[in-house]
Every structure is written in C-alpha cells, then in structure tokens.
Image (cartoon, rainbow, N blue to C red; front, side):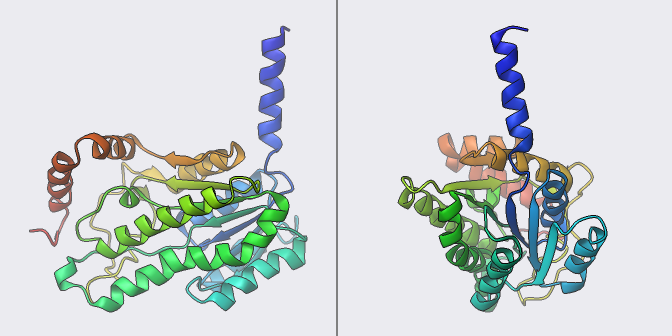
Length: 286
C-alpha cells in the first residue's frame, strides 16, 4: 500500500467519525428535510436535539430510539418565539453538556402574487424563516464559539433568485444569506464555521403547508414531486457538507444552473423563471 492510498484511507476514516459524539440541534425536525437530517445524523453517531411546533411528531422520533440509546431529545419549539429557541439550546446544553452544530432548518413557504398577499403573510414567513434563524443562532452562538462549531442554514435557490408567487419566501431566504454571510465574516478568527445549504426542489411537505395570500395552507402541492430529490438524499448531502465544513452547498442540476445563469444572464433568467412558474397548475401568474 503506497502513501497516497494510506492518506485516502485515513481521510475516509476521519470523515466517517466527524459527527460521532457531536451534539447537533435541528429545528423544523417534524417532517421533510428536518426529519431526514435527524435520522441521518443519528445514524452517523451524533447526539441530536430536535425542535418543531408539532410536539407529537418529534416526540415520536425521540421515542423510536429511547430503548436503544438516549441520543435523540425533543422539545416543542416555535422558532419565531425567542424564549422557545433559548429553551431548545439550553436543553441541548443541559442534557449533553455542549453544542457543536446548529442546523437552522425550520421554515414555511407561500404561493401568492404580492399584490394579492396580506402583509401578515409576509411577516409570518420572515418571523419563522429569518427571525427563527436569528433567534436560534443568537442563543447557540456562545456555545458554538466554545466548541468551534458550525452554524448551518437550510436555505433555498430562492435565496439566489426571486421566485414569482413567493415574495415572502424569497425575501426571507435572501435575508438569511445576508445574515449568515455576515456572521461568517465576523467570526473568521474565532473558529466558527458557517454553512449555507440550498436544496433545489425537494420532495417534502413544505409546499403542502405553504400559505396562500390570506395565510391559509394551500393543501395539495401544485408541483409534481415524482422527479424531485428525496429529503433523505438532501439530508445526506447536508450532513456530508457539515462534516467537510463546506461554506456552501447547492443541490440538483437545476439549482446549480439557476445560480450560475443568474450570475451571468440575470435578465434572460427572469423570463425563464417566469415561464417555468407560469406552467404550474393554477399558477397565480396566469
């Protein structure tokens, strides 16, 4: 076995052990990407503290592993409420003694033209998506600085390109990008790592729970999810990116092409995006 082969084996072994024993907080863990991340990180050996508004669903996740191990702990959490974010972080600290990774995953979407959308809907998205990220990061930051840990934000391609009918959603994701990029620069010499992860269209329930212009859940998704990346695959990519301490992660060919084309041909991409979303069933653009 030569030196290169030995080095590759050592790197692979180190990568495999990266999350083992780490304490990870995941918000929005009751379904979709958050639930998949919980299971993936538990599989990799992490201690996982999960929060979501649906107490029953996250307790069910916790109870699955109670007999085997005490590595998943849940707490009902509405990330738009600072005190509940503080309680989630304190839970992680009290049970496991440290915090190594915070995954800001909680989020909601919307589907309505801005002219038809009540202002309260935009505020609700900002409170959950943007302020939820700010709230949790604020309380976890002292412990993450101690452990030289990682803040990860599960964002969206909608944080690079405005998506028609999703003004509040895209605005919140753009805001998350600005917040996390600034946090990264402020802590360049403190050992804190920041990851911005942007899945493309993912087969999850976020579109089913998206709000309409009146703030009501839209119900059935207007998009065909058959060809979308499964939440479990997204979770594997995000977990790998955390282990490798990547700065950014953009998933799917469509997502990568959108980011690239927006950099060089933004006006042309505006028209492509418009046509794409106009083809949705019951599209508000029609």
